[in-house]
View 1 (cartoon, rainbow, N blue to C red):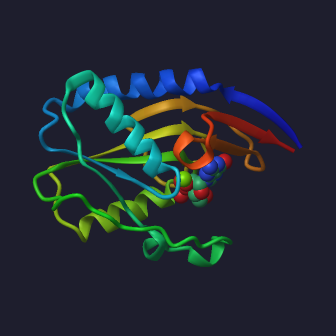
View 2 (spheres, rainbow, N blue to C red):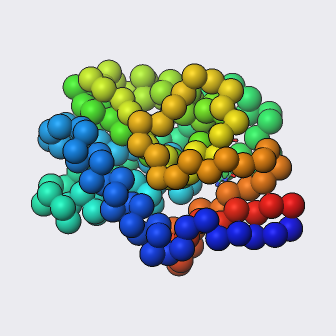
Length: 176
Ligand code: 3GP
Ligand code: MG
């Protein structure tokens, strides 16, 4: 297999900075905003975004994580079932929920995440931020904020590395 660098550590930091600015710009008030990361790497990504938002606006945005293990309709197709962890910083009613994930592919994970959110309250608005959109959607789900749209072949794999989990930052494409 062949590994191609898609985002260097510096590129990734710039992308996170830009995404934080876009969220601030488009969400209007930050008062009701809650970031919910989807395990595994959506969680450290959500924390990195919150840190950048705080740097820019001096506002601490609550961050949580959303375990969607039991909401997937295709559990048998998922070879590695890592139970995630749901850790909500607040009741989601009347909130603006920003779902945060590292890679979007079919869209099934996000559909499951929407079902999970629904069980924890009724947000005023729910939006989606992804670092990498690698295409191949099977559902009418589209991110509101995208780090990078990266057309891929189905057999390719995107590796996202984040300092908190991987002691390095960057994005690679593994081609076979
Ligand atoms: P989705 O397909 O539900 O949108 O395929 C199951 C899930 O695995 C994807 O969500 C996505 O979260 C993740 N995924 C799919 N392809 C990749 C990839 O190339 N890299 C990473 N890191 N995750 C992927
Ligand atoms: Mg992921």
